[in-house]
Length: 206
Image (cartoon, rainbow, N blue to C red; front, top):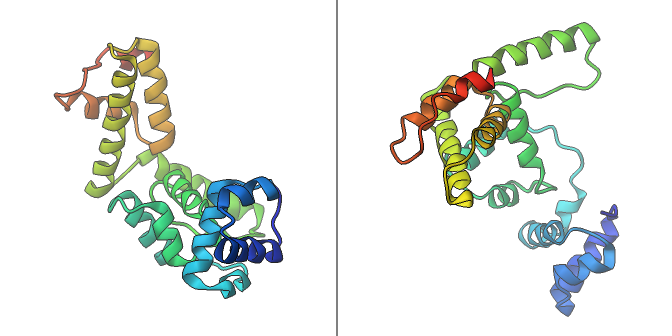
């Protein structure tokens, strides 16, 4: 995707507003992602052209956590939350969520230029928290919902009982995404009467 200048963004918005040039047409002209341009147009429509003058913003931990919780736990659309907050990119909130999970379900503002020994200490701390997995009941509920949906989709896609290899692959994906243990994943699956139960998988995933 090409890098858009501020003037490019203004032109794209004005062409959409005044000449009915769609995001799809603009995407072809500028070699840009259609969904990103649609987000840009909606962002300007909602906040005005001046939103483009917003420079780098160091968002607070509190704001990030509220935004993440709205998406993960209140099931609000990520794009809508991003637009409401005036985030410059629709991908920003997804990056926050990814880091939130990597940091053991904690919001941490990573500072630039930190000394190497301090960075290592922070990395070790984050790894320790991530290994513990979700600590609150709210987080555990979110993880269980994600696990069940993933297994349900696997069963529906195959329209038959998945193979052991497929199960192992999905469990590995879930562990990496949610930072939970194999036992947590299996306990979640096996406690749901609507899902196939997998006890032997534990041997193959260690």
